[in-house]
Length: 266
Image (cartoon, rainbow, N blue to C red; front, side, top):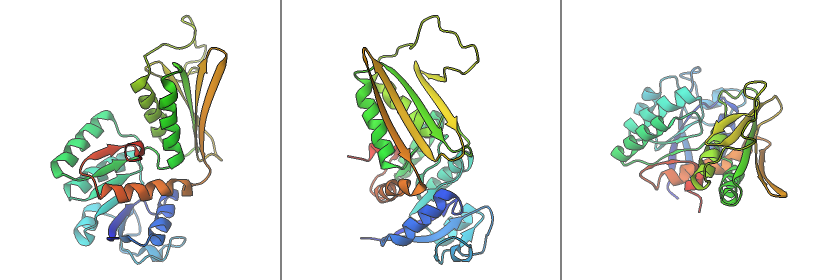
């Protein structure tokens, strides 16, 4: 299999460390560089706790692209930085795979146009866990038969955005097939603002943030005399790596932007 040259942004984060192990242990992946806000001029192997990869670290992403000329940027940073990096990667003819949430519809439209103009593949994934993607797909199937639905997403307390990208994506997928409906009693009142969660086209979406959690979500459907719960749990960040590998392999074969792994899973 042809080698894929990869630059990773965010190598010292928890997801970044797992991704480095994935690259290190995947025969046709080659790490050619990393982008980090510190440690410029060092090698990945110089950083304690990271794999023995002899890839240089850059603090400036454009300098990195100019010097190492990768095929793929794997971005595991923050929403603001991820948006910027994605645009720069496409400008340089590099295919981005982004695990950062927080992209708006306007962001996605703009990046889709840029990917189309450059005829480059790009993948933005709110969740890289294959099980989480299946949870979203199963929820969309169930929504054809259950109109009343609430989503509870639970994440660690260091997560910056709420609701999560997975929660929003799930609500969007359900809304595609569900007739819009205002749930609950027509005269219900919130005695504390936000008690009923966010409202996405009538779907209630709740966010929980606690230490000890990683990434979890359950989708609750209610009907006459029955309920259906679809739940996914990620207990560690290794759970995301099969999706990262799938995205990197797939982005080399497409020439458009894809939002969500469900769109590349048969």
